[in-house]
Image 1 (tube, helix red, strand yellow):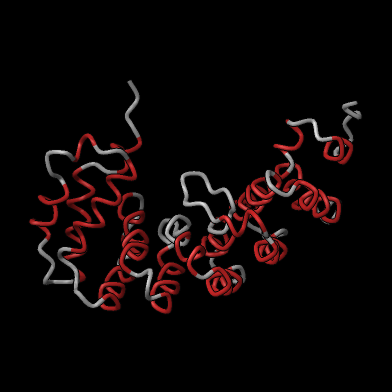
Image 2 (cartoon, helix red, strand yellow):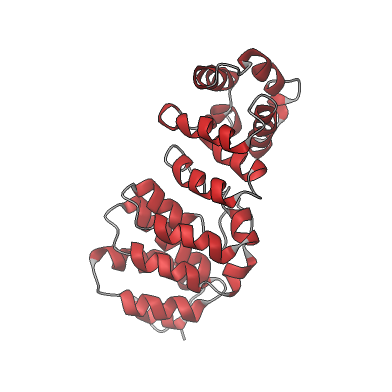
Length: 252
């Protein structure tokens, strides 16, 4: 039987490593107690997101009370973490920094470099859409492709496993400003996110996405690839306009 993702990403050895590097950065950190608190009797049975949130709550017990100080420690870990630890860092910011966006949002832009802050940004979008999207506009111009990808992935209206953002489903205009910046990005990782974002939008605003795809078609090999992926749901549905756009027969 294949090993479950929750067990691959969250084995006890990873928790122990997390405690070790935290103590290196923050000598007051009680790594032994932290590991014992995280890896309790219920640890093996918890699902992936439950393990992430449980670890975040346990971490808070041993971090500085001052959120800005805690964030500085977490940011210092970026070069040392991947996988399990990288998932927990932005989750900590989401849980304890939602009322401090001036600290939290810049932190998420840094923490996404070691994993992804795409899930943690969602509550901030729901609380202050325009203010948060200004940060995402700036991230779309970042020199780090992981940050640019985060600018698109974080504002997907229907991000799988992520909190919904109803305002973006209703009006994705702020998202489209970011996608225009990234539509010819040199990194495939970023372009895939652009395509997935447009595919999300097509489920609520098919005409809008088809307008964009017709405008982007032929701009470059990159944009041609993006629009084909962006229209995959419409093509599966047999949308006449999408079918004709890509040279298929009129479904009628």
